[in-house]
Each structure stands twice: as C-alpha cells, then as structure tokens.
Image 1: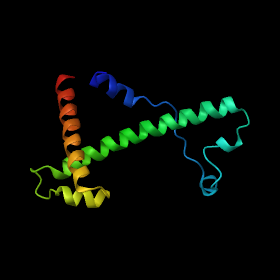
Image 2 (image 1 turned 90 degrees about the horizontal axis):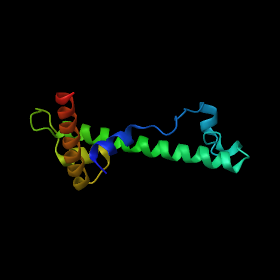
Image 3 (image 1 turned 30 degrees about the vertical axis):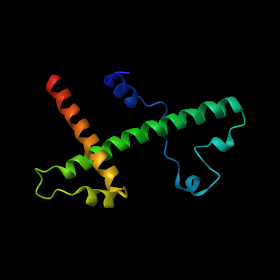
Image 4 (image 1 turned 90 degrees about the vertical axis):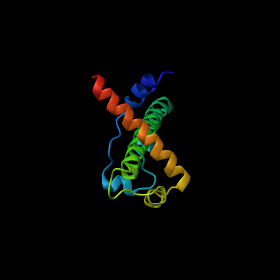
Length: 118
C-alpha cells in the first residue's frame, strides 16, 4: 500500500468517540452504553466502530508523540533533550525513544514536503 493511501486511511474516523458523563465513567460496568444493548448485531456493530475509532486515535496520537519527540531532540534547539531524557518523560525505553525520534523526523519531513507541494 502506498504511503499516501495509508496516511489517508489513518485520517478517516470510523466512529465518533463520544465523551461520557462523569457519573457514567465512574461506573466500571458502563462503557459507551454498550452494556445496555440487547441486540447482538447492534452490539457487534457499535463495538466494532469503537474499536476502529480507538485504533485510529491511537495511531494518530503515536504520530503526535513521534513528532514531539523529534522536535524535542532537534539539535538546533538550545534546550534539546537526549533520547534518554525523552524516554524518561514518555516512559519509554531509550531505544524506543530513538526510533520515535526518527519516525517523527520522517513525519515532519513529509509534512514539510506536502506544504511545499500544496
């Protein structure tokens, strides 16, 4: 799959993530009102929508983590952080932090190229 197709798929939001009221979130049995659904077809459809939405949200959040890590590690910054510092802040291993910095640099580079072309 081409990179642009993958980027487009990441931006799709399969289902809206609705925030639950505090009293509902406090109930450990309550989860996006799924527990109240009696029709298994409806339950499967909505729970699948939520699973896809959470995956998309996770992917997007990880991209933002990577971009932030790359910006924090930028050698042009006077206050740049080392991979070890970034790892400590994000609760990652140092090796993972290094990989995220590289991933973030790629994302930022792609973003810059997209702006120049568009």
